[in-house]
Each structure stands twice: as C-alpha cells, then as structure tokens.
Length: 125
Image (cartoon, rainbow, N blue to C red; front, top):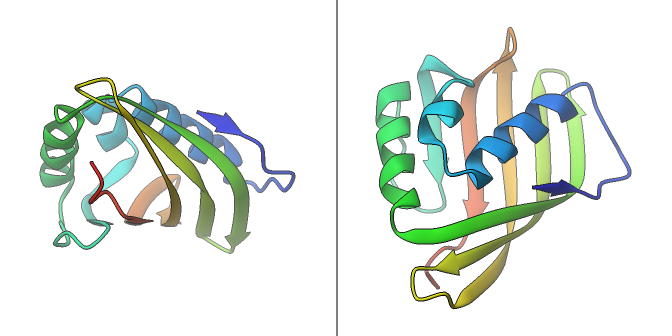
C-alpha cells in the first residue's frame, strides 16, 4: 500500500492501516476495523450486512489471487465519511497482472467502519 495523496485528513491513518491489511490479504485484520453490523459492498456484488460475512467474503476473494497492492492517490473527508481513490494492482495466480482504478467510501463511528463501499471492476480477474 502506498499513499501518494497530497491531501490528508484525520482519517488517513485508518485508511493506511485498513489498506495495509487488505494488501496483506489478512481478512481477520480487515474485519477488525468493522462494527458487527457493518454494511459492505464490493463492486456489483451483493451487499453484506455483518462483520463475519465480510471476513469470510474477503478470505474467499483473497484465495483467488496471488497478491494485490493499492496506490491511494486521493483522500478526502466530510465529517464522519472518508473517501479514497487510486489504483489497485492485482497479481493473478498464474502471475499475470491486472490494474484498475478504485474508489472507496467509508462511514465511520467511534473509529470503526459502519458502511464500507468499494467501487471497482474486478471482472478482469
């Protein structure tokens, strides 16, 4: 995970820690940032509405790729909502590579994520 954004917010440390866990493909660590009744949606997949389902979905997704890394080029905040965007670079199991833009919206409460939306097209994987 790399942050190249020139703008930083009070939520930048959380975003950095979250995306470090995502890039480490550590579903348990990712889940540690979430409230129990989180709402999570990745791309056009169905919404998930609890932390355990999000952890299991992430663990399943991580098994389908060899590696991933994010470059976050923008970070913004409005109150308890944080936004970031950039590029995500995937390494497939066959070692071929795929890079696409992404954007994320995080609703936060007491340092935990209550609503986690990732806008990305992973159909090329």
